[in-house]
Image (cartoon, rainbow, N blue to C red; front, side, top):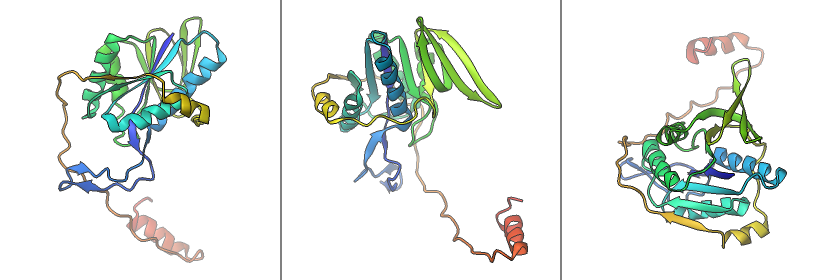
Length: 249
């Protein structure tokens, strides 16, 4: 079974966002880039399945749409345990463009099971996985929090209001995963870091296509108001502020 984990190269969550070019682009100077957390958990789950089921999974490939400066992130995924990587050599302009480029690459090298994180932690679009399923005409399920493979069937859990939904599907299949798919991401060991240097990382040139959206301008959210300290005995003032200022009661 051939597995693909789609990956985004995103800023570390502690990064302080700055804008450039009259707020029309993000200043990436000094930004620490990491694997998108949901993608990293998806990779961890696939590695767990591979370790627990000898012979079940032939290979685990990671793929991203990104320029050469995303390769350290890809190499980290290889150090964690992925067998090989595919980098589509293009700037990921928007969700449509990213999904379409991945779909073209996957048509050239099909996979039995494809995993996408439910969203990227930078733009939070929640669109690439579903678009990819449409481009490839493959069944997909979103918000997956549990995944196993038994007798060639994929079994999923997804959290819904008031409970958990259990889904089964034949392969090939796309799972769009969220928190819960794995507990903690794997940390690459020294042996994995050394092996990652020699694992194959293919570069695929992008297809000619346009993005469907354009970011006109970025702006930061309004600054939070200063914290107000209230005497614990002054319940009336607390109620007054919650009612008339915060407007939450």
